[in-house]
Length: 114
Length: 118
Image (tube, rainbow over all chains, first blue to last red; front, side):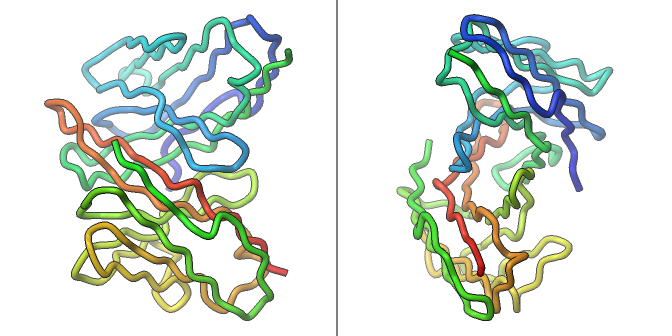
């Protein structure tokens, strides 16, 4: 069943602007991750935030996690045309171990206009 | 990290035929995962491929339709059998790696196989 629900489903911004994408989930999680997918190809891992973390940065990416609201946000600052892609949140609800199955949200399509 | 080679990258197939997708990983992994992504949709897990045992299928997916092989720790195949246009999707293989003291799972993906059934 679908765990993550992202919003908005589609986002169009101008190059240089910031893009904020949100994800909500339903059950307790071990961690939440964000992935990017270009043109229907394989997904690329962007950033992971554990359930005991509230904010994390990686380059132009900033992710927040609010476990009380069961929600996360991904902020891309100073967006570039190359950031145009679909973005998915995924939750790891199994607790521990390499065999945890990730549950993916529906995805957000981000278009960055040059 | 893990480097995953998946082929074919795309195919157009006639209904009623079968297609086998191959997935090669650059290192040994216990489990490999097969996902389906229908047009404009998210990823749905088809099955988990275990080396040395039967694959574990998710609800709505059966072995007769999606047989999986896992002959060793670096390779797996997924076959889409008796295809219909509804099987037109992107199929992705994936492996998971733990990282950090919390044993968080991070997924690595092949480039996907875009299947069109006509």
